[in-house]
Length: 231
Length: 220
Image 1 (spheres, rainbow over the protein chains, first blue to last red):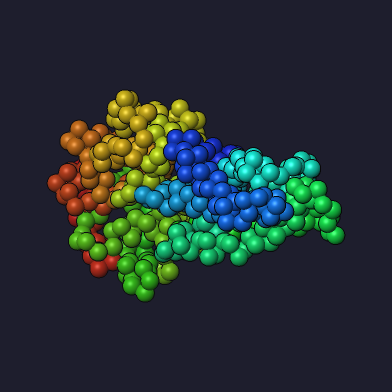
Image 2: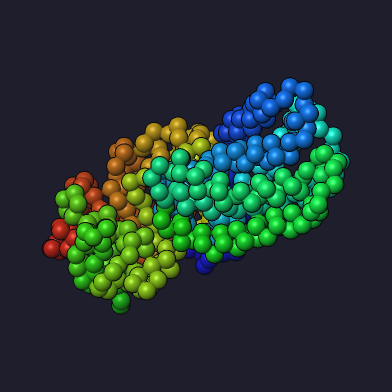
């Protein structure tokens, strides 16, 4: 073989392109995850307040809960792609850098989550009657939170992939871990969605999101190879 | 010349069960060795250990110059494994799969398509999702994914399974050509008539050990 390890980033782009090609062909995110996310938003609207007052005040939290629940499906799907039909062995023998595999899968999940967040953002504006006051803050929050969710999700996806009953175990493992993302992203988005100034500036919450993302990206790069051995 | 595959008193555990219980085996470049034996004899375990997918916990195990007892991951770039499963993404087309695995092996995407032709995969199937292929066509696509890696050591577990007569002839031709090119080939098979005719040497595996070595069946 002409390859001796390869570049991590080249492998990451190869893996991300493959996962997105699978999505383009199967349209699971488009046809199943996106409708599920919108359904969650609508159910919140039915349950909380037809007059929209409560909804507008709680919009940030509801938005991120919907993102979190949708990300479970996206992560489950991403991890499931690599566990079928001899693919764990094929990946281990492929010569691809495990860190590149991790980054590529996280990139693909992140790309899908960003599209979901845009869709859910539109849903929040339409369904909850929210006015957006800080697009830049929302965008920064979305990027930092997405990076953390995708990295942690990809890591726990492969961890659960090596265990039985992974479909039910993954939410149990992942949701407590990403609770800080839910809290920080909600707080960072609140001012931008409600226009109300908070005691703690959005920048502080953004910093927390960035730290979370960096920790899980670093952990994934370091640990994914060992977790891949257990698949 | 040192053997390309060398196992001496090698022990490999599946849980606490010694699936390889002190096996001895030496295979040189250009050899096609048939591993024979009943189910559970340790043939698949031996192939997976040689691929660096299972740990050799005792004894000597060296493949393609890599000591598996020290760093079994390092051998993986030198070996190709055709196992029971396809190792392909069922939702991607045959061509997309081969382009991906070609690039993963550090080769141009076009090499994947060339490998499909070499493995005898009908060009009309290139745009079909792997999940929709028959077992035989999927086997050919898996063979193409192995071909594109150009491994020094080929590890094949029941490679003829699912293939029709034409597919078996294609596979045998590829293996003979690879061996002539210097590749080392280990194949486990229950299709003894065909596999014995293909192999340059037969090794009987039973109880996780190589218990007998038969003479050459085919002159390389």
